[in-house]
Image 1 (cartoon, rainbow, N blue to C red):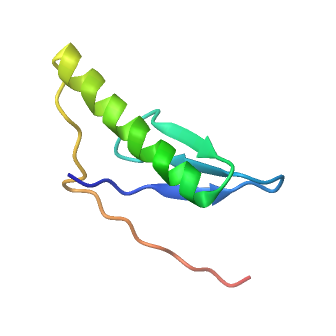
Image 2 (image 1 turned 90 degrees about the vertical axis):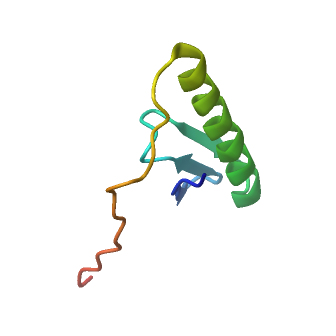
Length: 72
């Protein structure tokens, strides 16, 4: 199963990663690679928690992610 992640570089360094399909699933790292490794772990833990509590596993079905550009 795959999930879309949003990576944002912080102005003071580091990266923040959020997973739109998993509310509250946010992590960070000092480098992009570290942030993505942490995101994989956060997603795995999120899904384990869903299974343990009997909640459905969220999917991205019906979601569409589109980049919208506007003039600067």
